[in-house]
Image (cartoon, rainbow, N blue to C red; front, side):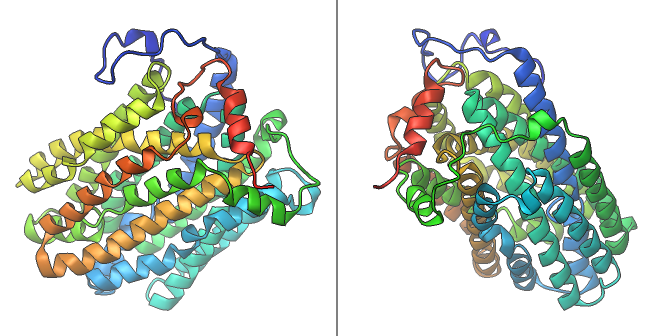
Length: 447
């Protein structure tokens, strides 16, 4: 994912207060930034298109709704079960951090997991009419993609901490997730109406094959772990070091609360399709506009993270997001929905990037895959709980009450920020000594 050639110096003013201009800077070479950005951006872009939450997500959703006749609660439960591997993503991260398949480097996971995902998609395409078979195939695909995600995230976090580029690569990661999401929503809405579930899953299998090819073509130097490993550390001590990390748990708690969004999942689909009478194509365009707003936020964040401290960015953007969800209620037509979604997307994107920046800074040394995937697990659990609760609440009280709970969860993030050590949250990307400080802080373990 490319974030564009935006320089922090071009930002003369932004409502985060004064920058820390007295802090020495460490400027990673442009070559390193470009190499890391191109490598992880391309890989995450393909992963985003191929995974079950990507290109096939809308065709699957409307197939469950219109093809199999499932209601809001049933769809929410189906998704909660299908995405179960996301809730234990830290297990995949821990396996990646502690073991290399067949004695190979991280490429071993790609060579094993990608073919499994391809086979599962072909199985799903042949069994779309059977709900249980459909569910089983998606669970297997999710298991494979969790190994692929854990490997990618572990490698990227190691590189980001080493080169003091957690904000830069978090912005890259956000765009790499947004681009396939926009494509998935735009193309997925059309596919839901014209291609159907079977063709959609076969196309996803093709994109997964591209991942397999990428694993064979990546430059070997970029596939090597970038952090110091601790081969003599026992699994028990590694777990104790993870549990004793002071910065990781508030960051993970913030991600759980952030993704607890009762009004933004299944309830919004039914509100737009049943109340506003919007078509699947228009709803896909709505989601795409939200993601496009997030891409704008990523471009801005790539510059702002080098000018302002993470703490200041988080405090302001979270406060702005508390009332943002209610803007959806102002939409009464397709054009209004698209305009509102773009505005909200910018606000959502800023917090999303900043929280994952915080997560990557907080990960324990040599347990980067575990830490990031643990964050994603709680992030996914928050989303699942919010969707199930929101679907139940929507049928009884409507969308406005769902959005009120969403705003409350966002507000509860603010107190958590004060529990995070200042060594983690009070620096900018590229600050001299920040890399060593992050390494020392993340390496702290109980004796």
